[in-house]
Length: 292
Length: 334
Image (cartoon, rainbow over all chains, first blue to last red; front, side, top):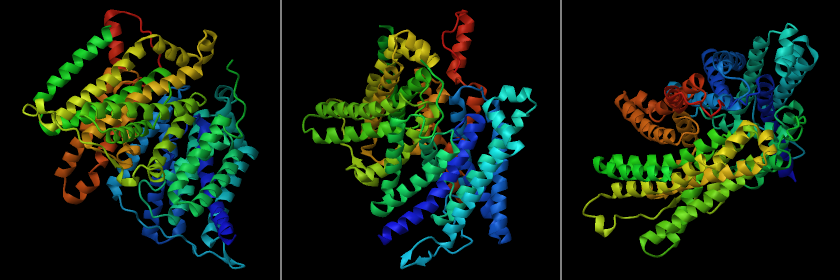
């Protein structure tokens, strides 16, 4: 019972990071109808920026801010430099360019900084609080949960309650109409990419201190799991990403705790296959247009 | 009959060509033949039905494991063991392809790409969970040069012969399929599913069938690699290798089998050439460049090629030829 409680609490923190990364995939999907397969490599590059800023100044917070800014800049640069030049309405070129970008970024990072795992130190203790004899969340887990929740709430407010959010949504849903109504659509799409990449960078920044350390491939597994989460929730749905993120986080934690860590990717793959076979569009997807 | 004849001619030419190569080059040729079989399957899948699979390395691994298991289990003369292994490779990859295809028939582009990506990541976990020997993998039997030929050729050349023959046997039916009615149905489904359905074509069945037809050559490619390296490990079929198959398909031009051959040679030779180059660099830099330089070049090539010609280089050739003979192109830009 104690073990179950501990695993559930750990799964909650893991799920929050997953949900945040999945949300970043949902944002870019909604803004540009592209699944950004380069999200992990872009986030890893942002974490390298944060790592070096922290090493230079000694402050975790300056590193965090640098990482977020680097992520946002990289997102906007990728949209301006690459994705904008591709033909619209064909998903394949976007995916292939993103894969090429992954190879360039990860190989470039490995050449520039070496393949070693560099340890990153969390700003708070990772020793869990013991409540009633059961070790539960650590201060760092609480920070992770709080940061993920705050960013997700801020993004929800931005998209649903502000004029800028309205323009972002209009540019994504009906680019032609939005342009006629005076929305600068290209700028909105670039902003969507920047927001998405910054959210992914934050998720990676929260994750890396709890793992082996920083490495060009440190975010890969998070991306694959978060992609599964986004698909399970329905690529279009922020609420779906949140729900599926927490659910998958709990599943991974339980499978890791009761079976083994290497069985976790299999469990996620099985869950995703199951959901896709029953509901090809994900759990909370809007209904597609009729095809026949 | 034109396609099989041309395949036979090219196979004989390739077999003869092995006499001009040293043992290491023959080993590379065998690896390239393995990649060729997998890339041919992938390029037909992506080019004709628009289904992007990032997991063809896993299909190759399925073929390799199937080959190693059956060829070890059969206790008889070597041709029997070889055939049993190849049959098992085709069965294992075909079954996995059927499973994936059933899922793929219901999924659109990014979903399928993500599912196959998750499959690649899960491979090493699966090798640990299933009786596949974990990270060490399994050993595949060694096929020595037959008595009659042993005075004439070295073992690497013999393996290159086996590789070329198996790859030709795997790809030729695919080429026939591609230019026949099945290929037409695939193109119809890619262009407009609703119109295809109105013409009495079941898009789900076409997509699933295309996945199986693409998986079997990939599995046979895995068997070829098992013959040449005498082992099957999950590490050999990781994400980097799987993505390099995509690079080969894109670089050669999606849908083009001749392009697949060129792409397969490219992704076999370039990593080796890049590592040779890295070995020339000073120690610390060389260690960092090792293995990464090729990936960097591949990625840059992938981005540049796709930005310049979303259809790939072979499409460009095709267009040049079409201009010269002034025949209208029947393929659509995708």
